[in-house]
Length: 273
Length: 220
Image 1 (cartoon, rainbow over the protein chains, first blue to last red):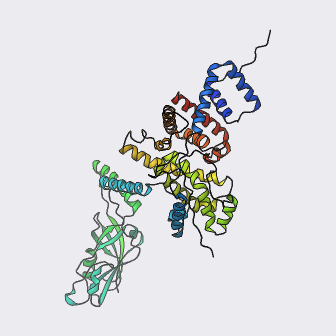
Image 2 (spheres, chains in turn brown, orange):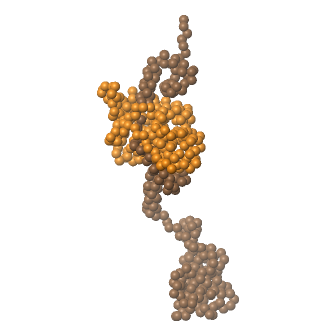
Image 3 (cartoon, rainbow over the protein chains, first blue to last red):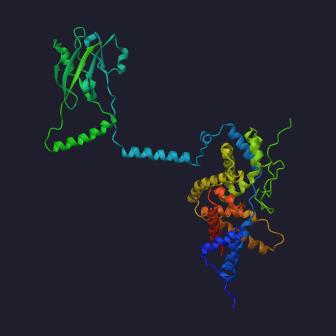
């Protein structure tokens, strides 16, 4: 009685792998022997191998596409031309964006622009931080009307010998308030000395009370000038967010019948230059 | 000083109407240049500042790169892929460290260029002309020349089988298609296929086996 040979049983995928490798001569002698044993005892596997063998032979016999006339010449000319110009900026850094990148980026930018326009996010009020005194210019003489623009105002171009009130918010108040507007009426420059005031502001930045900090007498016109000053709250990017939160709190306070606004008190120094 | 002669292709198999004709001789080696002195000499010539070094590389490899590109994106877009491949190679040759052969390096660039082009343009074309691109066989003209030793019926059957085979290869998933193209149609070894695709040899074996099995299922 002859011994029945051992026939390995393989899944289809494993058999395909073995057959594929055998077509490329990639099998070890042991694997080759196993495959031959399988093929000898499994007609379906043998048929599979024949089909695969024929398929690979046909694929390898497919005609090779021939290049168009003078392809290498055109390639060399193109390379010479583009290399002569140094190539694209991207190419110099080894970056080759795929075709359509520029168009895609423009479309993306357009979508972002439309989204921003449609959604209309709340404008962020960013005020310029005032660290030092603010000069309030006016024209000496000629009716005594002061031009009350801020330092950066272009109205100064035609000004005659200009004198300026220097309005400086001192101390901690400078972090919260900046000068917004000065009154047109002004006291006499000649009779005015530097003076400091403690003033109280309402929520709109208008002066509600003025108290002179100097012992010497203060010209009434100067007091009137100080009373006419209008301040604006200093808002920074982060302050804006905090203010939004504060406004919510204040609305909540209003619903509880609590006072929503609290006057601010700041110190201001007025001098002439 | 002798006048420099720029590269001229040895044209093969092109009829009077500019259509591609089949190549009956073994595809490799493609080059017909007598002055080809190997990758190393061409590279050293290029690195020493002689532009002819790169021209030699183009002359030697452009046909091979075209063949792969044509099979990946079709003959009409293949030249663009070849142009992009060699332009990129020119700029990137300074970073070529010789860890792989120049041939597999160029094949890898061509494959990536073809993928990028096919990815963008192919999808756009599919949107605007649905159903047309896949049905056409861009290589039909390759089978136009009949084998005089065969009967007309045999030639017709052969042409039909080749058209079906090409369609089946085009329909393969990309990872299997690349492995089958490089191994069976371009004649690269397992090592070379692994280098081009940047995958281990074991993965090459399994992708080839799976790709061939899929082809067998489609064509049986």
